[in-house]
Image 1 (tube, rainbow, N blue to C red):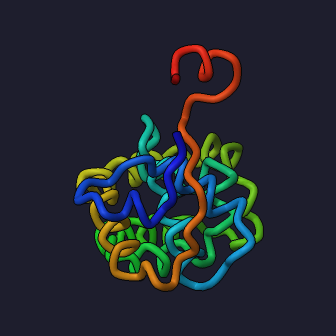
Image 2 (image 1 turned 45 degrees about the vertical axis):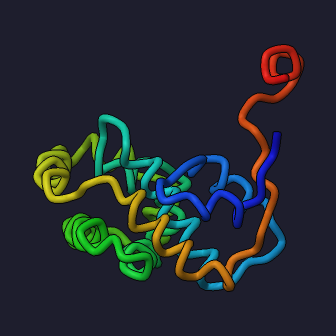
Length: 161
């Protein structure tokens, strides 16, 4: 069963963030609010793994937004994440265009950035509540796309009812 974004936002707890990210990215309605939400959700996903904050420059989806990422995080209320992103960016002497595709090779040659990024991880918590509150506050600026159930295909039909 699918729900729309507005239906999901009635909940107090963040749900289906990855599916919301996909729906907003594939949608036709793009504006400053949508872009900030997409950036924050991508940042959250890219930094959630073992790389932490460093994932923001290693993952190409996140790195492609390097020039606006800290501002978008700030916009959604994730100030700690924005500060960590700015601090990480200050330590990388490359232009945004050089970072945009991900810089795993550069990180391999400059391992001190990994140590620096690890210290930044301690100050950053999950930004899901901030992104969720922002989406609730800015609901009028967001489209209301359908958020499909995560079960798809044959097995989804078989087990999803």
